[in-house]
Image 1 (cartoon, rainbow, N blue to C red):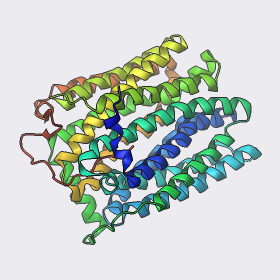
Image 2: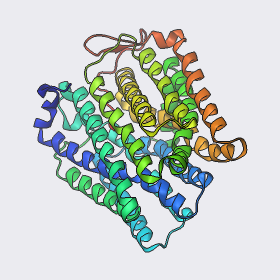
Image 3: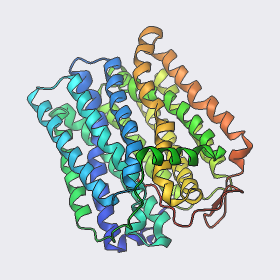
Image 4: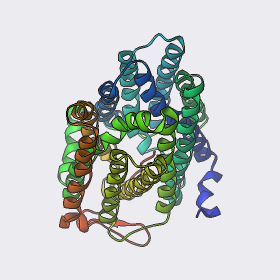
Length: 423
């Protein structure tokens, strides 16, 4: 599926170092969702407790992303990434140590998850515009796809390792290994040789926020997609909150959820490989139709289907999600001016993902009142109906992609210096 030419960006020392750092960091990150879920459940927490912990972390990440967009448009992105990854290494090391000592409760995990989320939220916009600084212009698409593929491969291994570690020594070691992976990424970033960014005009943060929002609302294809994605993410929260509960009740616990989580990353690897070269003429219609696959793992867990079936449909769903993400990224990068891209990305994250922590917080109590199966049915409705409405809108069909990957909306000229998303 992959050809030698696909790996050409790795010949450049700057991109190679960046890629190594991100890949190692992704391996550590792959362990943490499984470790967090079973750290909470094993310390006396319930599905509601886990949902609140996840909501706290995701909420902090989303809130910080808006500020991160302004910071990324004012400070060199490599400085922002080094600072946030150093902070995350300290947070994960503290959590891992306290877990090994048996000295942390679910509320402590929630606080640490919030701190981690804040740093992650600041990191995201900075990383979006970094690839053009370390890769040749003609290699940007392949460079971004290679980052997606390596992250997917690392996070395929990570959950599986986490499942074994939790069963043998508990979740603390997984957090410590994640801390080490962040330090590796920091070292790789420090070894890069990138040109200093040109000085940017300093204005009030409020004005920067407002300008980013105006860029969003003046593009119908962007704002309506964000609405549909927000509702989708509200529904898919059931997978992450109730999935570990089903795994514990029906499949044997952490190792099974680690297996399911690993299938997410296998799907991401497949999706990234497909996205390297697939350029559908109507990218947002095709990509969003692939989101309908998100209903499959929810249905499989609601039954519950055999573990192998749950893993396969989870893999399929995430392959489709990654293809959508790559197509969506291409549209954003080419249709939004680079000078406001980081702020638009921040609003993108907030608008489309703000519903995820709400879903995390609500789905646990919902399942407690109505049952797990009705909660999954509710999630299925939210992951399908809004997407079907979205793809019927004419403005979504107007977004086209040529065979050479050039995206057009028929009205707004493509940006010439747009920066791709990473991770």
